[in-house]
Image 1 (cartoon, rainbow, N blue to C red):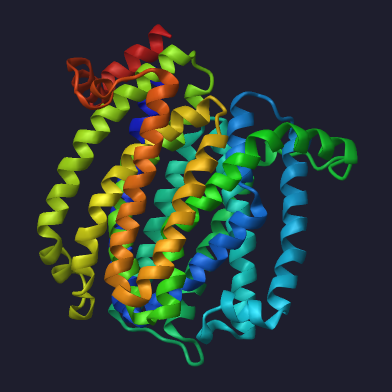
Image 2: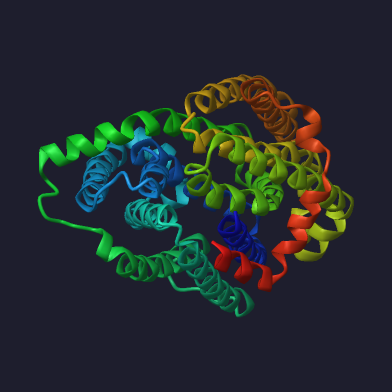
Length: 448
């Protein structure tokens, strides 16, 4: 338990720094690009993330899960990564070779040879980075991941602050291309460093052996299949709106909406830290211990989330007005609508984490599919009528629905009451206090 507390605290501290830097970074990027440029940038990143999800088959999560259980050998890890990359590249070529598909994948200004090259590069380097992080997380080496994340964001912030403050541009390059190229330069640097960290875990001998591939795929497929489909559906739950806004409105409205949504989702910092760290730890715990840890986390998170997000709701107008240019003012109303839904969505994190740690992935696929299909229908009906404001209300509703479905399932599955989920205990508060006592960490480690 002490190792889990240390890892959660370290990852939370790291994520706090990363989110603060990312928040400042988003301010520079948004003001540098403006609403329309931000809309184009959001479409590009959304589409390449979708491709990664479709063909990457959630391999990083599988690597984390099985490596934490010592269930994958070096050659199997290497084989999975190499074959997945070999599958992605020809599929990408086919997608971009078909003109109607390419026109939908690449936003207009980026539908050029340079845009295609950037898209290829982002797919490859994002795939490699995700898998390396999955391997390090499976080994519980969160410290390395945290340090790299902080360093990446600090360097990105320095780079973007420089081009924003001095309004630097290069002849022939749009501002969106400038942003994408700077990120790509840092991705290349960090992929190199990441691979040096895990090179002892890779073995390229006989990786093209069909027997090795067959064994590794068979082992991971049952876990990955439903989790992958659930992740894909979950992606649609909050990114589907981007395509509807792009189709029925314009890039400017998309830029305003994405700013509001991204600000809301930044409040997931604590839940993401807990999810990343808890899965490998809870996977090796008995169910009773896992439930106790999960319920304690859930209670603390509920009170923290509602208090913090209520504060953001109240100061939203001043916050966005101070940080962003006046043209982003319409984002305030959308932010206030979606922050309510996101608050409930955050509370689903401990519940999904306990399910993942038990290898229960099918239910996540079912819940995410229901929410995604319902969201699609509602976006299709109401976006042409109510525009981007209607989209914000639908997004908030879908987030609340996801939480309610997970809550009902876990309540029945694990026989837990609402009081156990929401009512704080004295022991919960003591755990928070202990997180800030470094000496306690050291004492706990010595006892183990």
